[in-house]
Image (cartoon, rainbow, N blue to C red; front, side):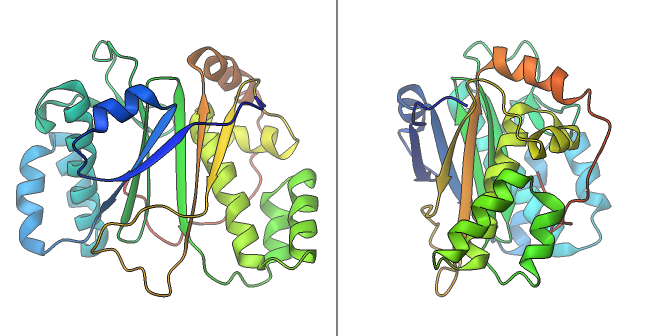
Length: 266
């Protein structure tokens, strides 16, 4: 992995200087709220494309559906600002491993992005520098964390987790720090679940950089009293991401993973 620190700026959306920040930093992480009245769903759906509206209709949980619609609207607003086009005109498509991307031919500035959410909090990582991945979790107790860690982490990470907990750190905080880091890396590499085995074995593409975000700025209507979030963002250059993707996809084994507590609204 590249030892050069990742230059990350974190802001709350909306932000008037977003384009300037994305030009100056390796990655900009925008936080936004998914909380909204039900009356806000219809205007959001009016901006989404047909595939997104169809996906919205498939959600059986009203809260998850609302978060998806509002999240896609916020994502489109951010991308539209950077591309200088209306949110509804942003050409999105779903990639090989379910990661939303800009359609080919619409990226003159090499803009890349990654989306993560936890309950009412949305994070969008934006970069002109390379493929990017972001993840966020609310820190909460993990029963039998050691057993779970044995299932999802490789030997190096498990040893590091054990050392940090033995030094006095809170087990749940340590667990989610490593969890978010791993998820962000996999998103940046673009390998999907096929890359889990390679990562467990200690493999990282040359040049991959990761920043752990123990604090992120929260929108005013996202609960913050007694709530702690852990996030991470990873960056991999397009050349490195392409090479790492083909390497990771050669692995056929897929070890167990924790089922997320919230349905995906990426």
